[in-house]
Image (cartoon, rainbow, N blue to C red; front, side, top):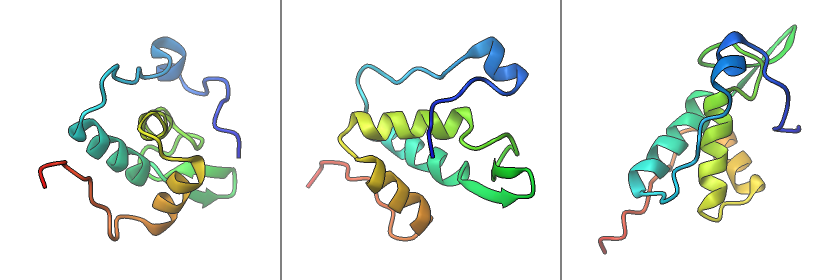
Length: 97
């Protein structure tokens, strides 16, 4: 499923894409994981919609989360597996060990 598309709602038309932080912290990673999980797709008659805000999938926050995770080296396949797995076994490494 292609993740680039034209804006579909008024918010996207006005605000555009959310920017990826130039330096991604552990907190940014945690927020990105939450974004891709909370804004995962649900099947509807009209097609896949965001679970959280019911806009066509992928919504702004889901796309932002994917871009942040990709900026830290996760592949599309790894992000897809994360979404499919849901919040089970999700842990953000904090580098303190």
